[in-house]
View 1 (cartoon, rainbow, N blue to C red):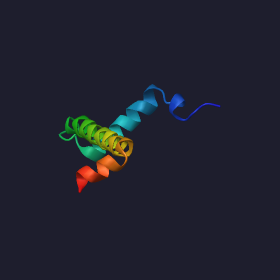
View 2 (cartoon, rainbow, N blue to C red; view 1 turned 90 degrees about the vertical axis):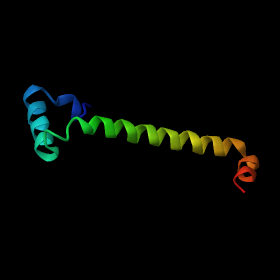
View 3 (cartoon, rainbow, N blue to C red; view 1 turned 45 degrees about the vertical axis):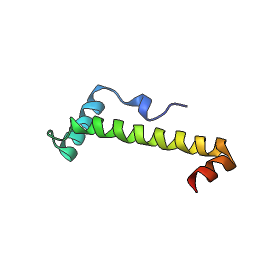
Length: 65
């Protein structure tokens, strides 16, 4: 079984990139990867903070109080 993403080739990729340029505008494209990176960093930070809170047990609750 193949996935849809495995079937994307040259012309299809150009069409998708063209649609992205139309949606976001060429001036916003350089900002897009930066904002995605920041969002990913914040998500990973939140996940690690949650894991630290879970690992601490009752001690983590005492520190918050």
